[in-house]
Image (cartoon, rainbow, N blue to C red; front, side, top):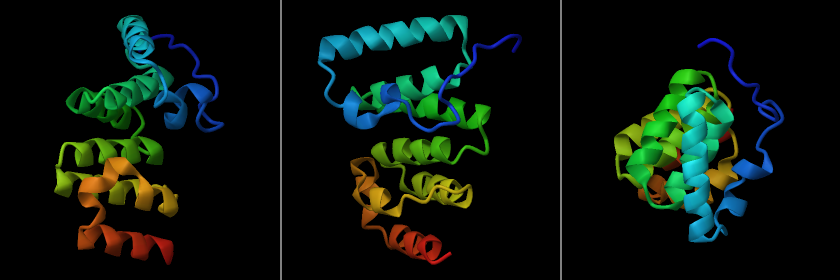
Length: 145
């Protein structure tokens, strides 16, 4: 889509703006402001990956799981080989109790290289699948690779 803004910090991992731990402590008014701000940027640059990542996290923190899911689906379409995008999509499915889709997408994330198994075992977003035997089996399978 024409000239897109560069995505600084994209290759170097998460920036402080996308760090979920920092986002969790935002006051509600600040989070609302940031939601509006990032949504305005997306009206001008709809495929700005870093903005989509932050917006997806903010929506999830606000409990707007269906909207977060839509953002995560966009990210996966834009970045089909991005393991983190697939992991976040799996989390969105899990938050919406769509267990089969969450497990399928989580498998894709791991196939693409997502390997923070300790975090997966503790991530609150994955609570709805954590006790599923398929989740435990998948973790064991990929930990042993």
